[in-house]
Amino acid sequence: MLGFDGVGSGLGRSNWGRWLLTATGFCRIGVVMDVTRQDPPIDVTGGVPRPDRDWRADQQDATFLTGGASDAPALVTSDGRVVAYGELAAATAREPAWLPHGTADRSVVLLGATPTVDVVLAYLSAFRHGHPVVLVSPDLDAAALDRLLHAFRPEVLVRASGAAGWPDVPDGYHPGTPHGSLLVYARRRLDAGPLHPDLALVLLTSGTTGRPQGVRLSRRNVHRNAASIRQALGITAADRAVTSLPLHYSYGLSVLHSHLYAGASIVLTGDNPIGSDFWRTCADREVTAFAGVPLTYEGLRGPLPRVWPATLRTLTQAGGRLRPDLVRWYADLARERGARFFVMYGQTEATARMSCVDVVDDPAGIGSAGRAIPDGRFEIRPLGPNATIDVGEVLYAGPNVMMGYAADRAHLADGDNLRGVLPTGDVGRLRDGYLELTGRIKRIAKTGGRRINLDELEESLAADARVAIIARDERLVVFHAGDPPATLRSALNRACRALGVPFSHVTVRVLDRVPTTSTNKVDYAALAALDGVPVNT
Image (tube, rainbow, N blue to C red; front, top):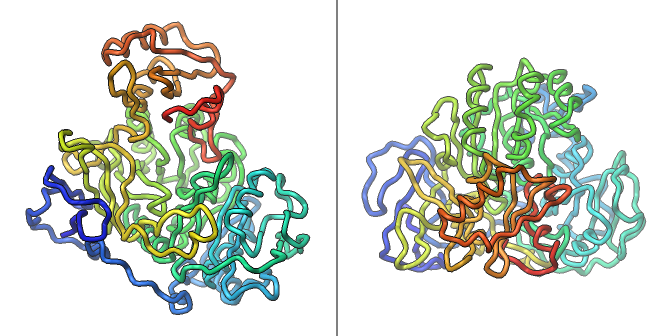
């Protein structure tokens, strides 16, 4: 059985008490579970480094994303074009034709992730042939792109020819060369530095407005998470997902990976999932699976019952906590339509998703993040020596845990820093085998001498108004889009009394709109920047 305090784990030892959550339940570490597992044991051995593998020896492994039945559909466009798995395999079997001559044996490819056939083929081809891919938003502005180029010094840039925002010729690169619907830019100087043999993918967690930070993922990370998600959701070759989330977002990319791994298909569209065109495409192309974040599901509560496609049978939600009342509402809607609704929890650092629960089949899981996916483990680490043992930082272990972070090109040569164990930075507890999340460690502020969980406070006010809250200088700043309802002041008063915080410590600010990130989450960093003062976000 896995423990988290093995030599080299970096997490230290403790006798505070530890609990382990697996895909089948939870137990005190040291107590033997008499449980027969069908999934293979987790490939993490108490902090012992996972061996480096030559990317050439792993080349065959990369076909797990192109191995569906040769005549079965893999990619489907909104206008009805179909790319079968046979065509997908043939198009990715050789070195990318767009790779400029004279580039290194392994080249870092920075790819603008527009949801088109040519972009997906470029991604799969680079992935298969050992070229690490840095996936980025296709809408990056010139300043953000310049920061990424200086940090990671990719040998090749690839984007869809119609993408806006990028300069015509990025600094340090040759003019773009057309390859079908792609534009390819080659770096002028090929002196960027070595790459770790396991590195396959870099997904960004910051860099749009500040210093870039990427998550380094191996081919094994991607493979094992795709396999676990396929098993957890029961994805089959008959399923068809849709790009309802950006491909540069780990959750959206995981939808692509897990469905291709299962030999299923995915519809490529850039339409907004709140709009009618998106749902018309879903109906026309017989989509069976839809993925969304909390803001998406909040916006769909009105229209979805009217536009529900006849073929839709699976909903998944991740990217933040959805209010329990909305989880119940969607569970009831899915039950009426003979569908499933999976609430999931994940992080980019775990190649996307770590837990799930079908709240239609298992309503006891409502309010939780579910159970660990196959091959995954959760553990709660108390926040201090005197803290309660049932609430603490959530630790996750599994073969999908990232190799580590990367802020610049030198980090791309680093090995596996985490050894398969991820301190998530989330605070939670275990309840009857389910993981319940209560907030982020960084979202716990001290105000008026009291520790305040800002996420829980936002949720407690949700019945009166949708707000975003940050802390600054012992004060709480509450942001609301448009004129706040009359009930917000009284709700804040009640919350302050319950928390023991003087109401004078609260400021309400009205905005035209609450800023969100490219993945449709509240952008707390942007809220902090409104006053130009660092805050605890």
